[in-house]
Image (tube, rainbow, N blue to C red; front, side, top):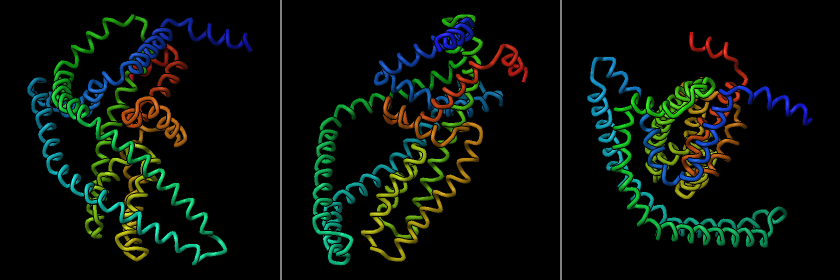
Length: 358
């Protein structure tokens, strides 16, 4: 066993290109892991820059200067974002407040209904089981209340940080786009010449991350807007809030859609009870999810996400545990990074030259 490992180690790490790749990956991972909180605005700005790089390049190809293209694209992006936030935030805030005020009534009605179950199904459900279940729910609600209170106490410092980010992030996006080539050239000077594998991984990941971020933003907009319209037409309360939640749920593949089903179901249940309207809402929600999974995702991520569902779920759990929300958001690109590294490791110099010719 040791001999096999020794032979593998000698074969793989005798190549200086492989050593360079390992050093870059390890240093990058440690740097992000140690300074993730400080680097978060930079990482967010990089993600937005990836998203806006395509329209900037299109305008540059139309003989517009890179400076002018960057100013136009960033200004449009900031303007559209501000308009969307100013239009949506008051509605979301109002609906969130109304929903929170209605939660105690929902809990009370749900408790009354649960207490009637032992009378309706005495052979299956016992009163002691219902009481235990209700007490457990109350304990969990108290725990969540404490967490929400702590979060509200920390919201002032978070609000100050958010205001700083709202200024820093657009500035960084602007300079990342305007000085893209200079930044890449400056960074390359610090890398060794033996970086064939690193270059191969970088080229593969650059296109995949671009496709993923652009596709994910489009998916969020399509799913969120279509769900909001469907819920509004069905006269479901809190349609905008639920539509936004459903749209954002696509950030967490497979898991997000399952989790957000719970508030959609209970809001419809407490509004209409077990009726045809509840069935119509869940049917519309199911159709949107089916179209998203079987039409939208294959169209947007046909090449960018060539991963098994189990791999995606493991990536979400792993990177989400390491870096929270942004780890979940970039779980699929990070999983494809691992795949790209494995492909590069098993490639040869001839494979690299052939891919460059293509």
